[in-house]
Image (cartoon, helix red, strand yellow):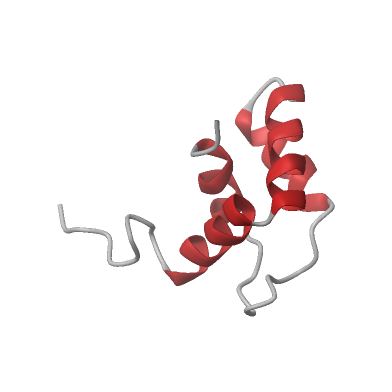
Length: 75
């Protein structure tokens, strides 16, 4: 298995989305709320994704995979 080229992330988009969710206080707080309140990570991802804009300020699309991976890494 080869190393993931974007600091452990699948692609630039997933890495960028994870950076924004993990480092923007409002996004982080909202992501944690969704993760705590949902029965599954998939449900939390869909609910959180529904309230996000199409893209990060850097232009990366908020995709299901990117948001799901970011939520999975939050504690």
